[in-house]
Image (spheres, rainbow, N blue to C red):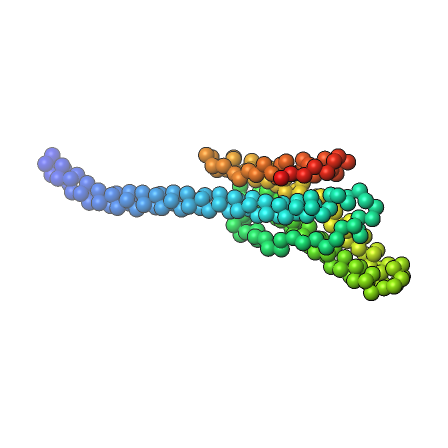
Length: 227
């Protein structure tokens, strides 16, 4: 084969392979760019759902802390607190936890955070339920007294026993959930800082200040309130 023929074959081979290579490279580049766009979009979604989770816990914190400050703290050490605390009015409409949205946490280096979030959310719901159940029992007790001439007899005494139990549960649940929200908020802030470089978590100083006051009250301190 002459040199000219050999060069001609090489040129023909290059003409054949070059379009195939260009097509493959173009498809790979499009695939790479699409994956990168999808990854950024998913990262934005994940970041957003964590901020919404923080905001959800802040909703519960504000409502429960208001109940504690306005209704519970002044009677916390009173032996007759079950009858001192009257009907408690509070917000009943809260956002819901996006279980599916936060499930991506299970694929990260800190999968336990998913369980911590879920447990804290259930603790929040439980605290609100404890307040509502105590309200119902207070209604039964106060209604029984209103209809009874002998305040120490019959249904009123039974209702009083249940009222004391429900009141103790309410105090316990509200105290515990405020500290739990503070703890999970710290975990979320740290997770966001490590997982999403250059992005910031929500941070409400009211949560930290209020829990410090609540802890001081639980330890026997004065009933300080936060504006």
